[in-house]
Image (cartoon, rainbow, N blue to C red; front, side, top):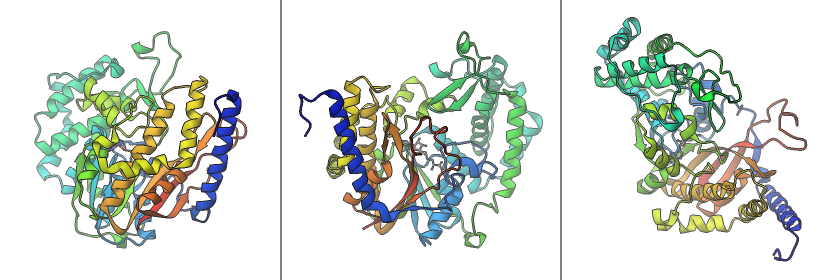
Length: 476
Ligand SMILES: C[S@@+](CC[C@H](N)C(=O)[O-])C[C@H]1O[C@@H](n2cnc3c(N)ncnc32)[C@H](O)[C@@H]1O
């Protein structure tokens, strides 16, 4: 125990020593299962690999992994059929990739952006009627929005003046014209508009927020940032319509499988459940799924509701809904308030206890509280965010164990993080919690280090690169 009378620096040092020692113990516990997996390049475990891929390239969801990862995991762990769940579905990579392989897939997604991507892709998978394809082709060739009236494009405080005035006018006309199209064509046309917003705006998605170009009125007197060319609206949307029309011809035989002989011909239904997995998972049937393949938000302060604000405004999310979505998200930003997890589900007491009993986690939380009291954190919300992240993840893990059949597999992509100079072994902590909640850790597949990951790239001397992994857990 650390006595109250000790000098503050000693307290912090003792806590740090304890963290290193507990991290070492956990590391040796998992040592034989921590394996560097050369097949898992950063390209495959990120959006990179999908950049040129028909359908996946329509909307650049930077937080996505590639369909090859899904294929690789199912093949490597010999999962041949059944039902698959992704509780953090994002743009639906798990759903579409596994469905191609003949799996029935269910996804849960909280944010309307991911939902819109998945819904548009479901419309395409179901097959667009020739009449609807014809309408979309007419939009490409005749640009009917140019003659339409305007309808109001919702603005949020953080999206005000995001477009040049002429572009805003074109977007509003496009939206008005969409409303006159048949249902599926309208879904696709609105989705394609969402796909070009960033390219025609003064903003760029960047780290934890939107960066504003110096040409925007909002930037008067601020540090200059040049995002490069800002595309003309008519040109950008016409190119996107063209890409879409080209790709739908090709999706009938997608090159998104490692081994095309594994492709099943039947189209298996995909189901999307809109909302928070913390609310929805508890309503799913026990032992129903054969596998879970997922990637939650990382514990890295990345705020999807800010980065994707243009898209959210287009989808009609107002200020109040935005705040509500931000709070419902898995705690990964300093703005998240604590959630009352036991009020959501009293059965999560075991998950809470597993987190309370995780010594490394508790020591990290003590250390961060100490750093907060010393005024050494760059944001005082960090300890609350990290606590929320692990406790909420523990609840998701316990629900995952409940909905998987015995022997079912869970795969999770996640990154370790660093705060106040301390690396947090998210991989080891979550695996240790998972083992208390009905899983056995088969492996923790570590992505190979990026070449040239020098101390220079890592910010300052002595820092080791953070592990990026795919956890492989089996339901006992
Ligand atoms: C890393 S992304 C998943 C990317 C996905 N694997 C793909 O390939 O597109 C994490 C997703 O979790 C979603 N999310 C965050 N909190 C959530 C919650 N409580 N319930 C459901 N989804 C949530 C985010 O909106 C985001 O789309």
